[in-house]
Length: 460
Image (cartoon, rainbow, N blue to C red; front, side, top):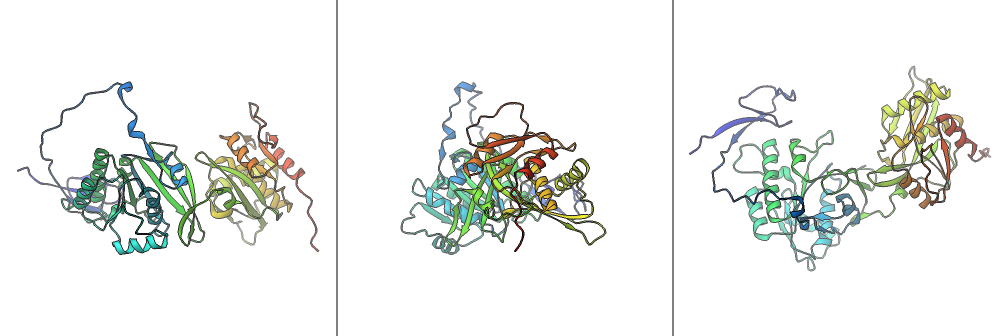
């Protein structure tokens, strides 16, 4: 019998040590080492290797995709669910992860057997949620519930049922009896995920795993957890808003940073066919400090309204507040406006926010932020039918951005008639019925935007 060895694993970073320390030398956390019994590997007869294959000998049958019933989810996954893939979904508590996955089973249960491992809830609780989503138990014959936290029992049920899609809710609630750590510890989460991955690849099961997040917003557990899976999804949203964003940060079968938009209603989550309408304010209201930009999330362009406010400060140092915009980038834009354009902002409070709370951090929003600030400073509204696209350099230049054609097509589809863009080295096709106004510097873009601004009507 092989000798049992004891290791000490940090629950924060997953570092492995041969002896106990009060502080982890890898991440610096105190009292974070847990004792783990390393089980020896039993020698068994190794299967005969088939040898290396040439590229033209590999078949593509393993990339067949299954529709999830949600077009937004299929878009984020790269076109649908891939057989044998491992998808990790994280998000804050109550954001709607379980609701989305249970609603996904409505479109999948008619195709093949599905297994929902409810490790944190009872079967009765899941059934109550299914009633709220409008699911009829008499017509859902292929959905199986397994209220179990033991990893061996879950693996045995997966081997016997062999479902097309299985859902583990959540990975932090599962435990392996061969390990001494508590459920949710680094060793338990890592070993449970590795065991599920091996079984899913062998039986060609598409596996969805729900993961908790830390207070910083990252998925709890070791970083190796994200390296084991094929796709990592984050479910984002504001607790005071009804819309939810499903974002892919890793995808071996599609584009990363792709975004799907959902809305939380009484009967669960529904898809949003026109996401840009969520992030556009009242187009009939002309208010100084309001500008419209086109941001790209993955391959999807979204038209977003930005609002800026500049007012005299009553403090020794002016305030700078942002919502949905990176604070450092906003400070950089304010410095460019003061240095290169000559607008005195050092004694003024400045605020900027995106409608709907959407986080837009790409450089293409710089020009919209700058002109919104100037519009508020001059107290002059901008034309509501004009979009602003461009990156602002430290020298006051308007730099080109990526995916410009997709942004212009989205703006034209929503009824905009004019776009202020950077000077491009190549000519753009004029197929989207937009008047393009190229600007080489920020001052040129400001003059063009204010020149086409509607006159301000005096208050009665």
